[in-house]
Image (cartoon, rainbow, N blue to C red; front, side, top):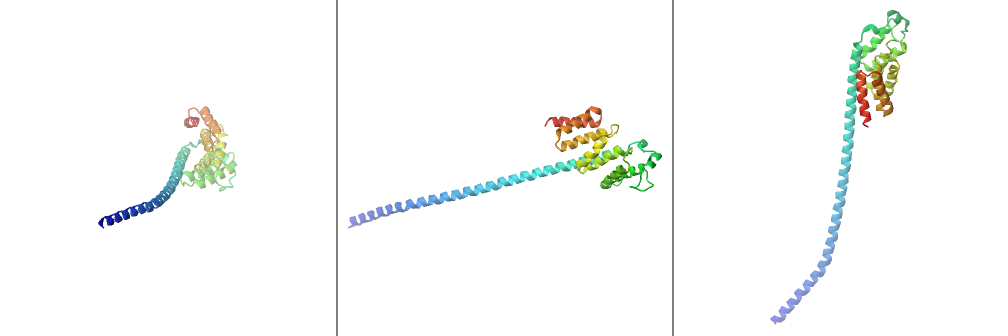
Amino acid sequence: MNSNKIMRQFALVLLVGAATQVVAAPASAANLQTLERMLEAQGQSQLQVQRQLDQMSADIDDIRGKVERNSYDIKQMKERQRQLYKDVDQLSRQPAKTAPTAKEATKAPTEAYSKNMSENDAYQNAVNLILKKKDYQGATQAFETFLTTYPNSVYKPNASYWLGQLHFSQNDLAQAAKNFTVVASIKDSSKRADALLKLGVIAERNNDTVKAMSYYTEVEKEYPNSTSAKHAQSALVNLSKH
């Protein structure tokens, strides 16, 4: 009896073991498929995160580029403003011998201002708007009116130059070039070298390298010992590197 009982129990164990193996096989396959789906979902999630990080990096680079450009523009604007102050200060130190005589002044029309205002007074008024009042918009209008009222004035080169400077400081390159061209056309003007240099700078900013180099070369050739020539030479060296 005991022997039969033991055999029955042994057979039962074998049957249970076989059934367990049969059930475990599909269960393992299902678990493997579930694991594969989980890994695939995790990979997609990681890919999406990486794409987001790449986009964020690109956005940061774009913002950094804009900040750098803005910083450069601000630096250039400050440099133009400093140059304007320097030029205006030089103007204020010029000798009075350039002023027209009373006889010459009375020949010019004065309708744009008071009928009692001379050519010299009109010019000085425009200069004072820069030097004393820092009213650059008012100075621009005053110089334009002055040149309209006194088209043949002895102050024409200087007035045109300061108009060019005022427009240049506001990044109005077209109007600046127009006024600097007037100065450059007057061979005996003391501001001609500076005007040619500014025309070169404007051409360079407009990506017209050939014209810029032409202006710089003219400055260097015609005014070899001037400060403008040194700036022109430096600009030519920089352009030749590109």
